[in-house]
Length: 174
Ligand code: IMP
Ligand code: MG
Image (cartoon, rainbow, N blue to C red; front, side, top):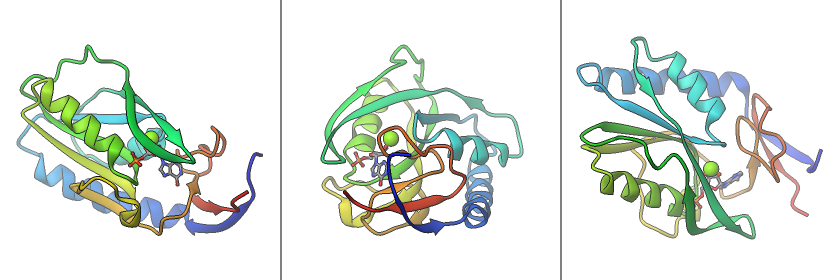
């Protein structure tokens, strides 16, 4: 293990309960449309998997891999997107993201999708750190607002470790 756990800030039960509420809200809102869910890899793989399993009707799912260039564990706003051949012209896209911090990554992805001709772009984030915001960006659906500490687990990583934990922890800073 590459880090020391400080506290469990969100338990498996808390996460699962909140995800059911989010799925209910989103699925009611989109029940008459044909939305395209777009999880952002790697961080949102677990969140997306649980959220989508709680949508009670068939939907389309595609994936984007976005790597942001980090500077002292903060994104710099330079984002590299893969799967750019994705056809989203005229689609109602719902981005699924693990963490919203400075806002640079999601802002970049939303602009990218609009430029590709999406009809609408909304975002659902599991964790929001409002105190970390550098760019004015508001998610459409939020799981939890948390303090501006580095967290790991449930898809999110510290140096690529800890994504497998079914709960979310804060870690001891070096
Ligand atoms: P933003 O561009 O600063 O909003 O960065 C968001 C991205 O940074 C997320 O997609 C995460 O991958 C990563 N990130 C931000 N905070 C954390 C954290 O506490 N733990 C793990 N990854 C984080
Ligand atoms: Mg990420």
